[in-house]
Length: 163
Image (cartoon, rainbow, N blue to C red; front, side, top):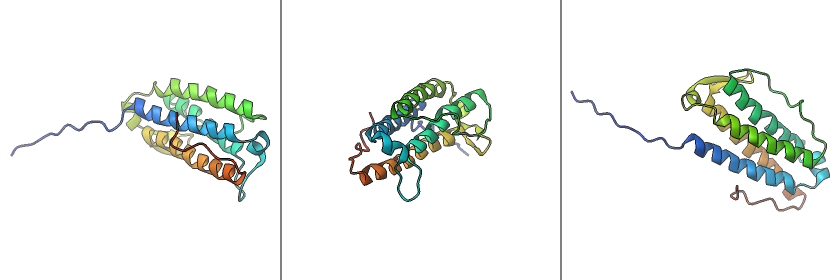
């Protein structure tokens, strides 16, 4: 009996995933910028949270989660640590968390992407699935932001312009 082994190529690299994620973050940042200050913190549709609160959720997930993965520390999720009062403050925190993402993402070895990690003590999945969740969650909330901007009569950025 003959056994044949086929080597498969990796579909996407860690660097490409990070570039993809940062493209989404760049676009979400532009959505934050598009909001008038008052509406960023107060406007909502159908009982959903204002976009500033959605952005704070995203800020509270990405950097802290990557730090937890890298340091193998399980800490509960919390949106309470950061409460911005201005758009400028929100954007500054967004940018600083982008730096945290860039720093910690590169500290995850290729092997670790396949390991199970109990994110925030609630979500026990392989690391790569947690990271894909961060991206999916951001796209989801950005879609809410697009709805808000359109309801306000503001043209949102083109969704394909991520850089």
